[in-house]
Length: 225
Image (cartoon, rainbow, N blue to C red; front, side, top):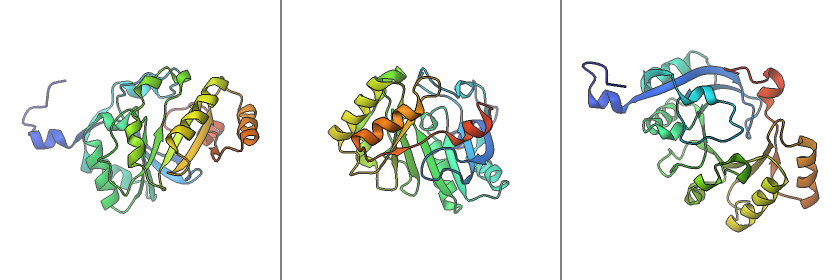
């Protein structure tokens, strides 16, 4: 898409393509259940076979970062999650995260782990996926990102089957993730039975947090929820 007429390079550098901004209950991570504003950015370089936000791969509305912060303010809640797609695919995402933190919000970033997180504002809680073999995108994992995680961050494994579980358990040990930050295990709806995954975790005494997607339990796959 060509730049709009009379748009400066500075304005372009602060512009984001936004799929949607909405308020809901946080469905995952350690802030599950809390009212949260979600800023969903458009675009993603990955194509996970279980993706439930394919509508965010394209389209969206161009917005200046300050306009996104102003829209967030309308909802009058303290927690904000920047998600996608893959939000870090847009360079201005880093500026948005910084400005949301400056505005006093409790900010989290949901990222695939395939792109560099080293420049993310340290005030942001990073929730980073490690893609399992069942996702179809295991080769996209950027394991160097683990070195930039802190105890307030989280690593998430989305489990499709028993092989994914065994792979995740092995990666946890090899990368010593449990000593670095919290670990989340989630079953893929319709592919991995949730109770079975819970039993595997208990059997192996894994130091992970089992989680279901609260928003799907409440509202299914309805967009903007």
